[in-house]
Length: 191
Ligand SMILES: C[S@@+](CC[C@H](N)C(=O)[O-])C[C@H]1O[C@@H](n2cnc3c(N)ncnc32)[C@H](O)[C@@H]1O
Image 1 (cartoon, rainbow, N blue to C red):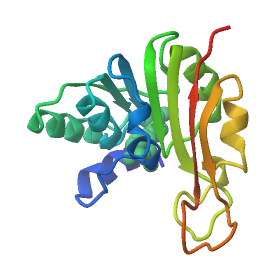
Image 2: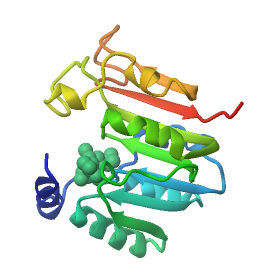
Image 3: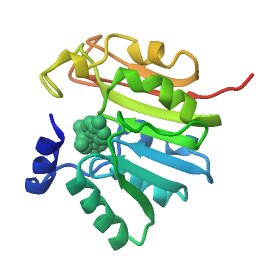
């Protein structure tokens, strides 16, 4: 989808889910209690709201201005401070050595991976969750370019220490479990 389409979607849809991703909701306890966090391609920013509520200095970027405006209004209504930016994250990736936490949910651009690793401070944590090509139904993007191959997050972030990795594919009883997506939490270790 283009930035115009994303803007239209956020303008017209009032029913979009505003829940944090599983990778953040289930593992909130792994977050540091202080530091700087970035929610990248934040959309309506459910993850950013969680990070700010947790007490982190929170930044949230997306190129869809309508999403950023809605997030800013939501943050103000909850008396949370979030540093929002309308920003194309491919044209302007995050700067090196800046963040203690980076969250990416339901966004995939492989060329950004080295910049994400560089952008973490030592001991910084990456929380990543997105759609896989191995699926049990048609949820998520149709274009395979925007879906992960099996184990791909492990390869993209192999320079980091893997803390949590979760991908179930189509194994076992597919009426249960975490399907269609993979999630990873990884830490930047400086040796
Ligand atoms: C599927 S939504 C996910 C939003 C949010 N992370 C979530 O999980 O609810 C993908 C988001 O990526 C944003 N996006 C896509 N390409 C982008 C780019 N080059 N720069 C910034 N944001 C981008 C879109 O505007 C959209 O909000």
